[in-house]
Amino acid sequence: MKQNYSFKQKQLPRLSMQTWLPLLQCSLSDLEKHIQVITNENPCLEVQSGFEVSESSSQRSHFAYLESQNRVSNASSDEIEWMSVSNESLYEKLDFQISAPLFPTPISQKIARQIILYINDEGYFEGDVAEIAKQMDTDIYKVEQIRQRFAYLEPSGVGAVDYKESFLFQLNDYTLDDELSILMSTLILNFEKIEKFLNHPRLHDAKDILKHLKNPPALAYMEEEQHILPDMFIEYKDNDFTIRINHDFYPDLVVNQIDKYDNFAKQKFKEARELVKLLELRKATLYNVGLVLIEKQYTFFMGGELKPLRLQDVADELGFNESTISRAISDKYLECEHGVFAFKDFFSNAINNVSTSEIKNFIQRLVNSEDKNNPFSDKYLHEKVEERFGVKMVRRSIAKYRQELDIPSFKEREFLYKLSIV
Image (cartoon, rainbow, N blue to C red):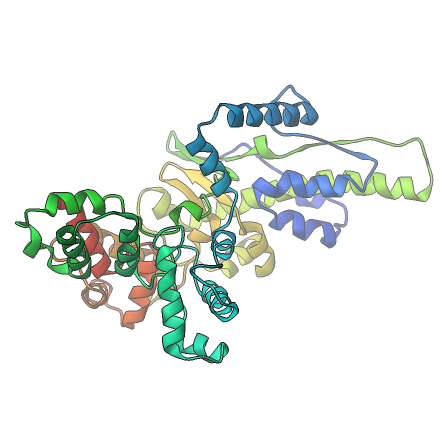
C-alpha cells in the first residue's frame, strides 16, 4: 500500500488530554471554529483558513452580505416568502397560529400548545390523546376536537396521525365539488384498493390533486441535509490502496513569539507549538484507523460486504483505548469509489458471524426487487433473512433495520407504488 502520509507519535511531547480529546472528536466541518476558540485565548497563535481564497474574512463577510441583500432586492414575493419561511421553525410557525378564531379560549390554546409538543419533525402527531387529556385535566373528546382543528393550520396536513389523515387535512386547501370531494376522501381512505377507482370518470382530476399533496406535511421545515466533508479519501490504483487526508479543510496555524519573556508568554508559546503537533496527531490517528479499516474491511473496498468489526478490534490494533477510537471516528467520513461513508458505518455487530450490514444490504436488495403490486411484509422479510443467513431473529429487528434504511412499511410502499402508476 502506498503511504503518502506518515507521522511518528514518539516525536510528540507529553500531550494535554484536555486539548487533545476535544480536538480528536471534533468534526471536520467544525474544526476551524473549534481551533479559533483556542487561538482567541492564545496570543502566540494565528489561524490561516485552509480554504484557498484571496479575500480576508472581513472582505468575505462583506461580499456575502452584499450578495444576500442583492438577492432579497431582486427576489419575487414568492421567493421572499420562502426565505422567511425557511428561517422559521415548524414549532414557531404552529405556535404563532394558536389564537382565535380557531382557538378562542385560553383552555383551547393551552391544549393546542400541548398537542404541538407531540408533533414530530415531519409534522405528524405522535402523542396519546388520552395522556394529553390527563395532563390537561380534560376529556379525550375535547383534546381530539382541538387536534382536528390543526387541519386548518399551516403547513397544510400538520398534526395528522398518518399520511392518510394528513392528505384529508390538506384537501381543505382545495375547492372541490361534491363528486370530486367524495372521490378524493374515499380514494385516500381506501388507497390499498385503488384498482376499484381506475374506471372512475373523475380519476384524472383526483390524480392532479394527489400529485400536490405533501408527505410528510412539514417537508419544507425539515432541516436540509448538511453537506458532508470527507476526512479522508481512499483510492484504489495500480492494484494498491492510497489514503489521502483531506488537508484542504484543516486550518493553517502560525506560531508567533510575543515580545515578552515572562512565564505567561512561555506557557502560551508552548501550548501553541503543542496544538500544531496535536493537529498532526489527529491526522495520523485517522490515517492509521483508515489503514486498519482497509485491512479489516478489504472485502468491502473491493466491492463486497462489510464484515463484523468492533471498536475494540481497532483499538487493540493501534494500541489505543476503545474510547479514543470512538472519539476518533465520531462525525468523521471517508470517501471511496463506492461513495461517502461515516467511519462508524464500518463497525457493526454480528449475529452468528453475520454483520448487521450484510443483513441490511440483503433487505435492501429484496425491497428493490419486490413486485410493486404486492410489496414484501416485514414477516416475509424476516423469513427470508433467517433462511438466507441461517440465523434466528425477532421480527422487530427487521422493522428496525428497515427504518434505519429509510424503507417505508409495506402498506406505505404499496400506496407509493400505486400512486406512481395512477
